[in-house]
Length: 562
Image (cartoon, rainbow, N blue to C red; front, top):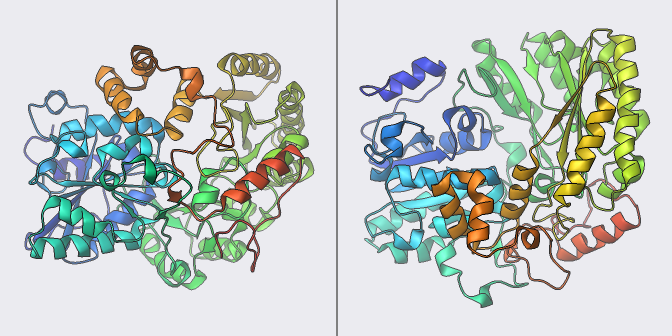
């Protein structure tokens, strides 16, 4: 194990590249963690960006920590320590956690307990560290886990974290108390102090906590990996963000609304950022909401090929992917191309505002398999708003058409269908709608399995319905959920969730039912920039089966660009 030198153990085990040396002369320390294991945490670009940002300051040494399964740590016999210097996490004055997945809320509790500080912020003493949270979940709806944190960052954290550190160090110089320091931090735009936001009067239509975004996105170096490691989801891959935000208006997509307006990285700065992986012969993973929407994507692909840099992408837009990009991916050894039609029928595509026609999808599949990429993966959702059985049948029918093309162009190629339940998310047009009934979803899964089993060379992958339902409850929860999350975490995590709700007299059905138009939403005080009226209009457009046009320069429709 790593009892003597944990840093060397992790560096050797995961073959880390670019791990910064911690300067012992730096007086300030910040411990940055992820509520899951190393494999998941080091696959998260957001965590790496904050890690790099803090260490670039020169006055602060940022170290990492992750959830551990070591029995001594779990039983409280040994405090959780950082990877870099094996220092107890609880000894740092400032701690940060990246919150990317609702099901990790149970791990947040476990991680705080492993650190050795009280789970609830109100119970922490003057000399215990401040716990800061950020990430997509904190931005969209921080309420279910708000009571665990002293500080929450709403929006993109690269700039805000520097303001937080500057303010905190100023408070230290003035020898301010913990509570007075929180009052000072509360003055920073994009910072949410839950302890100062408790009364019923705080929650209403007054959007008082404004999301912050990185405004100089196109004039600064793009976000990229701070450390490259093996045995992570993106093994030994250098992640590079080429765009952020999306203006496609998919009505179910939280990321599309919480990260708008769409912004692109400067092409010259992308080339500068690529010098590092080029020198070390690393594969590059291009990151963005819609990679194929990048305005100079063909030029970028040709540049990567010219420099002999192999690259990968997660998924592509069927209506914007070019032959140049498909050929480049094939040359780089891509074996599978992924598209996300999300719905099988064009009626349902219109409802969710997924503006991709069947013709465009089939053309993209045809071109990708002819380019030399043998396998295809498609993402679909079931339980969507206003769904009918014909929409589920349409998934099967569309899959048959895709399979025919795959087998024609690549006889040994396979088609994978990834089908997941629709989970209503905060700050989307569908935020008030119910989660579909579990029995209905089970029947749809069973129907799809029977039909897909008839198709040779097709694999059906589905998400666990219980986990999807819990995700839906946590995503739209209020502060009452904090105590239930703690109870469930101490009894085994999400597996104990249903039992905890029952013990507290809470109906799962009610938590999944959604919200009426008159109800105040738990996250109503969080301003992500989109007007509430826009969300209301989008629901009406969905019911009428009308598309909303993609963002364009000068557009003021949703309110973000006002």
